[in-house]
Image (cartoon, rainbow, N blue to C red):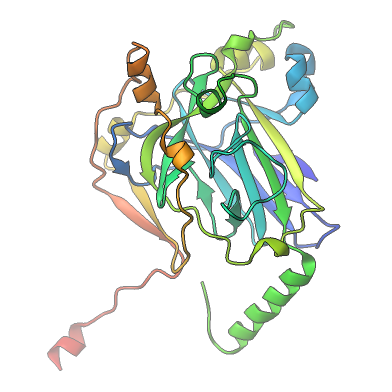
Length: 336
């Protein structure tokens, strides 16, 4: 079951296990420069507002009404990252325009292991973009359909779906209980691990395109394919509206545009680096790695590249993650 609460998606599977719950939210963020350099993780600037698509069905195209889900607003060339929160293990697939963000393959509901086309929660705390190399992603950046920018258009030659697609599968209850027993045994032993009625024009629909390069690992599944309960899954479509569409459909103003990466950095505000311990990363997708970024495609078709794309240096990078070493005090030892 999926419900929307406080601008995030809450998924629960009581038929599998009472603890099988997770939440997914879409964070506004800085669009990093699309200049070929690998940047650290930008901050979250608050959740994108979400609305039930069914509440505005009469003002939306028929194809949108058929797929249901939620709607969200994005400025052109605005970036997002997906935040996952779960204490229960899940396998989550993420696609844009029905193209898998990890492999570049067309959407299928089931999970694939070779290559792995899903993220594992809670090991994967967030996803910022398309997996193009091992340890490198290209940022999710909103662009209008029909101009050739989106991953969907570059790989299929069509601008049909747009938006985001998600499906989540919980771990089988038997396997979860075994994991919990192992964890309890570790703890006992002292070891701890840390308003208009007109539908918006189709050409204004939004999809996601590959932006700048960022350092981020997509972690390999440490459990194996057979632990995921693929009989019980929840799927959701997130349709993206540009800011004009959002005001027309909902009658409310969208969030203001986020600051540029340069303005943010000039104020001395932090960027982030995630440490995943000993977790292994999946290899990047050659298919996604060959796609043109927003700036590359703009130049190819004679358009001005995205604004505010100057290279920056992030002077303040905070390292976050599990099992991070604590710097020891060595004063007395040095004197001994």
